[in-house]
Image (cartoon, rainbow over all chains, first blue to last red; front, side, top):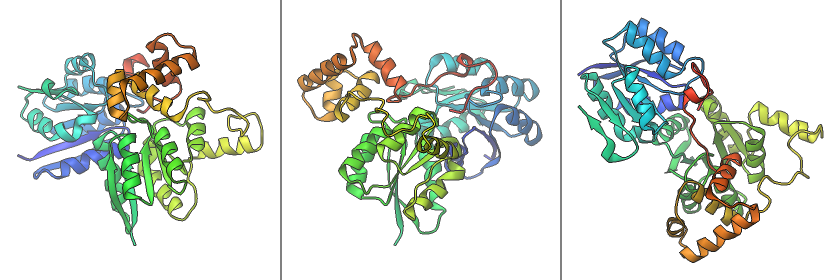
Length: 137
Length: 233
C-alpha cells in the first residue's frame, strides 16, 4: 500500500536515519520533513501526508502541542511518535493528544516499519523499551 | 586507500543517519559500528579505524571516557565526539580527553563531513563556541579553559569512573562485575573507595554526581521544561 509520510525531528541526522530506514519499504514515500512543531503543523496542512512521524522534544513547539493542533485540523491523518522518552506516562500523554502510535527512539530501527504499517491502517501501535510491551490493535 | 571510519552511538537510527551521511563521501567507508562506549573501544582496538566518531551520552561507558581509554591505548587515535550540548564543562572534558573534533549532534548533518575532512588532513575541528573558549583561555581572561585548572573529576581513577557510570545507571555490583570481568568483591571495594573519596553516603549522591559531571545523561520530558517548547535533545 502506498503511504505518504512526513518526518518531524529537530535533528537532521535523525531524520536522515529515519528516511534511510523507510526508504527500504516499497511504496512508501517520504514527502517532506520538518524540524519543529510549528513547521510540522504548517506542512501537515500543505502536504496532507497519510502518516506523520513526530518527535516529542523539539524547539519552538513540542510534538505533543503539534499533535493536538494537527488532530483538530486533520482528524484523518495518523500520527506516530518516535521519541527518546521511554516512559508509560509520556506514552499515555501522546495517545491522549491524539497519536495512534508510540515508538522509543532507541528501538526505532526495530519497531518503526511495523508501527508505520499499523497506524497507516488506523491501528494502535505502542512499544516501550521492553519487547513484551509492544502492542498493536 | 579508503578512509576507514568507526561510528558509535547507542541509537541505531542515529547511526544509520551518520553512516548514510558519511558513505556519500567518495573515498570514505564505515568499517564498524558500536552501540556503547565499551563496544566502541573494543572495536577501535580491533579494527584500527582512521577516524572514530563517539557519541558522548552512551550507556556502559560514555564517549568521553571511551576517548580517554583509546588515547591511553594509542595516542594516534583520531576521535570526534558528538554531543547534545556545548556547555563549558563538556567542552573542557572533551579537550582534556584527547578528542580532536567536537561536533554538536544537532549540527552533525552540516558539520560532521567537515570534521572528518579536518582530521583526515591532520587538523582539528571544533564548533565556533569551542574555538571562542579556547581562545579566551589562551588569552587568560578568566574563562573555563586553563591549563592550571584541575580536572572536574580529580579524585577518581579511570576504572572508578567506569564503575561510577555503571552504578549510576542502576546496575548492581554483581552486574558491574560481570560487565567488567571483575569479581563482585573487587567491585565492592572500588565502590567503597569511590564513596569514601567523594564523601558520599548513598547511591543517590552518586547518581547526582554522575549527572552533574556528564558521566551519565538523563532525558527530561518537555512539560518539565516549558509548556510549548524545549531545547534540542
